[in-house]
Length: 491
Image (cartoon, rainbow, N blue to C red):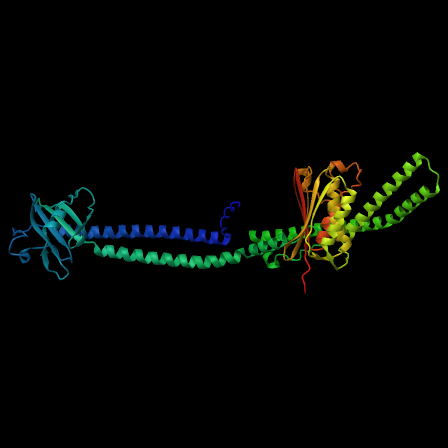
């Protein structure tokens, strides 16, 4: 069993691609807007908090009377404490010793900072007084703070801090708002973009559908009418998609005109061949009659008899050619044929027996089922199919070639006739043209076997007229013609 071909990649429609690109662009823009807005607001809030922290540090830079250490047993009530701002903290260092470490809770009560928070605040770098003051963000047990350490006028290091949780909360709500707004924008852009793209590309969908319909139409022979066109509203605008619709309509008009011209030319040619063949039958019959009369009534010399025999042979060949051309013309025109049940087995047997008599130098093998193989059609034409296939087998193969003829039921609906020989085969460059009219192998061009190049085209035309087909495959030592015809079903 041959390996299955790799699955073709799934095709992504142009509409999906455009909507995806639109959503990607909107998402990138929203991401940029969210980032820029977040940074801008964060910077503004940080500057405002730094300004408040700077004012708080200025208020804290005043001399204070001696007081107990925050860790003294007297408790937090003895502390002077930071300013009155909610959550404001203050830590004073004098020579590395903490002289004050307190903060004000939401109720305004001054509380002392624990040792861990003091260690964090002691590590805050002291800001230079030569430039603008900028706070440092730290995380304490009492929350997130922005703190500022500076050298006070009393020589002490003062660490002042304000809670930054409100700023963080504001930024969080801002980010959530921006994200929800961005998702809403993406949803609106997706729905609106899909509708707009669908409406804009609708003419292209019509073009694709019409082109697909035309691609599946049988354009090889006969009269072909390409009636479908892109609608008028799809060709009026100056957009590119409407230009494609207009171009398709012009293309279909051009193709339809070319097909109509070809059909008229074929009709004229068929009428000419049919008329010429019909008119040639009478003089050819007269020539054969006069030839026979000369042979019977005149005392001819040996040279004369040879000439008469040659004339009779060529007239017979011309008659056969005319009959073949006339049959092809009738088949092309779809002329009515006999419609009867034909036992294809009897036809094959009779043709094989005749071939054994006319081509004794070949080995003929026959394989036909015992039960009838019934097909519906013209018995004379079906006989010609089998005769032409067998004639083709012995005319284009040397003596001693084995020709195997087999008739079988391919399935419940189809009869299959196979003619196989072990001759030299058909040249590869000729294999695709064997059913073309007047196609002949080199050995047949001399005309010694009365080959016209119409036998296989007639086989194909008759098979198609009966709803069947004929195929060929060939290589040196094996050439197989396979014909298929629909079976007659019992009522």
